[in-house]
Image 1: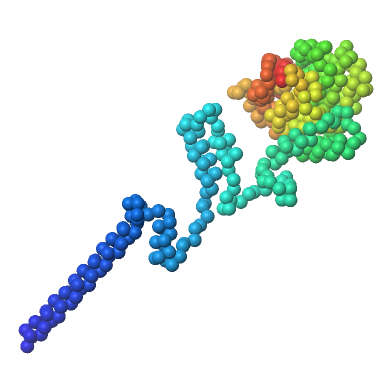
Image 2: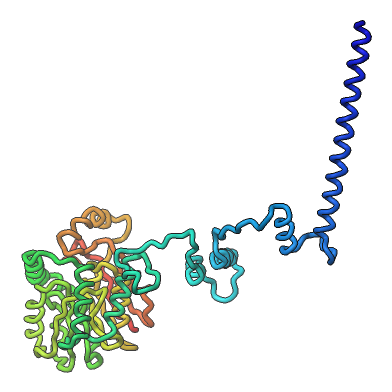
Length: 391
């Protein structure tokens, strides 16, 4: 009996195995047929083993009942092209003058739908149109350039001049925030009373520079005019007209007195309250720009030098005397590093550690004569650069 049951079970196992084998063979035949049909469909009429985009769409329609929705690209063509242009520049493959990566990207980039445009607090509202740079400094420079399109010397009473004056006033307040009146008056008085020894020692260097102006300069702008210590060098030059620029209004009465003492007629001197980063004078309108001990306290040295070049006529002269940082590794340099924050606080933004000579050298003047000097009457700022640059 047990033997009969074993034979029956073995027969059933063999029968099940045959059914499975037949099913696998049928599936294999169907798969081969599908693959053959798909290959014939892919090859098409032209014998190309790869399907064309139209054939792909037809296959998708047949298999899935319609086209799949296309997602927007995460990177635009302009971004992709700019990326490879930048890569070519980095590998030295670009033709002509090589561009830096940012320069290569800047003219081509357009924001994709996945990017958000950040707006600055200085940016105009959307109804003005266009994208805005999120950099406040760029807006300041553009405002200064726009305001500089017309002359403010002398200032006329027209509405246009009034608007321009307001623009310069806004830039003045942004770059040189208003100080209390008592502080401005105190600082002006201190400068008028305590600089005699310094001016006596620096006089020889200044005389060399101002000799270059005699008979050559008719219209002169002096940035950071202060109390007018340079007016003594205009004595005998009756044809010169000086426009003094300074952010401290309290300096005006001292500068006016110095101008009268040098023999400048009232109509030959004008004081304008403004900053060096936005000189309220029209383009290419003056023969010379004077700057002595001013780049140490401006907010932006390079922007001030751009303004100097802007207002100068072609061939115009820039005369400068500036104190600079002491040599690295010296005790004086260490002392300057320690005292620099205090100096800025008590001396109206004056910096002890600027390398102003490098800024002037890199400003793009057509000709530059730069020398160094060391003064004994100003121990904390004894390192100086002085010279003449031509536009």
